[in-house]
Image (cartoon, rainbow, N blue to C red; front, top):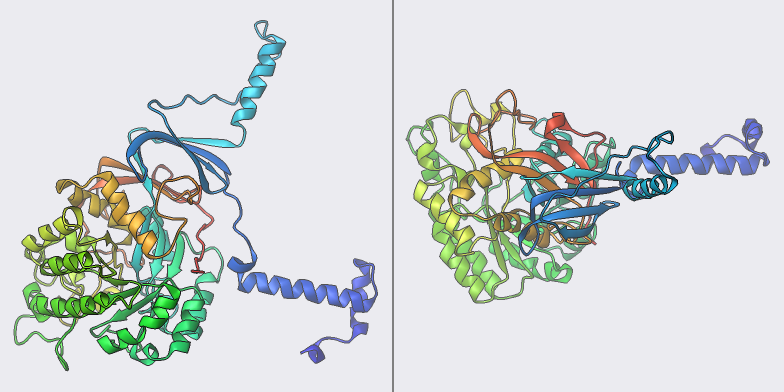
Length: 542
């Protein structure tokens, strides 16, 4: 490599600004150039996070959602971390930073000195008054498809994390598939990290990553160990076809083969739990493909039941550190999940806002924006899913399963459910969707924070996230629980790359007024948008 550098005589010009000989000057210049190249290629590694614009801030609300209770409190943040939470029944009065007039006949020297001391106390401190609004830990979305690299025309990190910030989501965990290549080894993971980090300044919220478990790597301990060593939070597998060519479905034997490596890293395995009969091909079976019932019946409940039964059998062996069942849609499986937990199986399960908000009866003919897998099911099923979250505790958390695609892949014009891509976009709307239906079912703010922040942060191993408690990252969402808005009207646009959603025109409760990431306000509704520059970081599990 050094043979390609100019000869030492070339570096004579450096003596105009460096006092050494040509050899030393050449070494200094080349070292600086290499350092600048490293900063450009790996900014998150070589540049530590800078301080927020207001490095010490205070936030007040009469509804601060802490791990133990909802209280009126003043939350103090210092350098991006929560420094203190002081219970306070009334809003503190904050002084204006105005110097007293020296010419005032009523100002004594002592008055002026005291005022200066008071001003010193308030210096560099910014106060946010959110009285009558809720301050809750920022949402941690365990299941998001950002599709970068390779399919940024579907979404991409920039638009996906920007819409997350608007929705009060402060951390997303990106799925290993729908990007090109899928994240199934170190090489593909490094390609993803390069795509996410360059150009710098396009990550609006913090981001972590799942790795993929496929038949091709499941039996190769070295490949899995290397991938987990690089910092993915865990692995994701499909028990049914995933819809992309480079992410094959895994059998139970494939899943069992990964147990030892996952145990070594104490990493969870997330599984898409549908088990179709061998050689089954999705079809309309001669029925109208525009009817939602045609699609729903093409993926029967039995698929989900059979897959979850096999996962429970594996979890009961206790050879896995943790199996996490993705997007449960069939409420008939909840009793088995709850029973397995009672028997000591290391098992958790999630559901999604679209299963909790919509029912099959409400989906019109040709409305392919509602297609997802597993399918949305009947109203009685929706209500039982809510019971599984709030009463039975069979379900542990909610995630968006934000799965965008271009509208032509959704076959919006033809309305053909069988041909349409399966996936619902909703990362920006998760909070109001959950709150709108959750409060009808008696969901408390404490339950809300547990389902959307605390539990997903714990499963992902994000110890600094998920709760408003001393020492944690100052990640907050501030929302008005009584406020309402209409999705995608002129005043409330959706910022997904393809902003037409299944929720357009729905009137939702829970208006988000602000989002804070590590002490910095990254979204403000009254300022009509995102605060620049982007503030998100990559989180790699150690």
